[in-house]
Image (cartoon, rainbow over all chains, first blue to last red):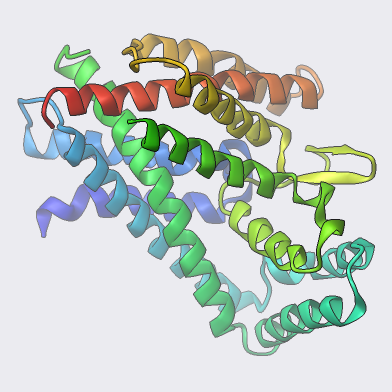
Length: 168
Length: 148
């Protein structure tokens, strides 16, 4: 279990970063790559590593850090939504409505899209939870965090190898 | 090798087309659902602040100017990469040099030293996206060449 601590700790930090708006707005897509580098650094320190990282280590640590951050981020988001009965989707719904009206698509398509979003928003406002929203968040989080996690893992392996093992 | 290079171009092309979907959404009704998909997908990687997105002709990108720059820069490198024979290993310091203008821009605008400029954000993003992808690809190929 101990060997997963670096991934879980970095994923936890990433999950927190996703719910702090100012941090999220400042760092954009850099959050996941940075926490992947952090996970590699934690791994290096916790195991007292004496040899450079290999590519597959960078990729696997980055991938699992991305996945763990997706779960932590989702957990925090679901918890806050459950308490507040509101989230970014609920807040942006009025603008989404206006935005859809500006699109040059036919009425039935527009209505169908609006109805789908409206159901999710109503579920969140009434129960503080929507399974469709959670599912969509999880899928999106897993895809995007895995990709950026792998990128961060590869870049991180190279940076740490260069800095601590003098390997270019 | 060439197949991988074309795959990278294709992925980044789809990503960038998703960013500019509002500019051609009128071409087909089904694009509305792609708009919703990309909008939600991009919300994971960008704040999508309405004041910071690139807007012209009454249409906007889904990503902010900085992120648009990063992905556009990466796309530009992916095209250049097709015409280069072998990925040349670039030093780590060049990645940091490429990131410095973007970091300064983020810092200066956050502390109100100067106002947010879409052109500066987009340009600094292009630089990091271009060099960042070059660094990433050269790192992967170097690791691969070492039998890893």
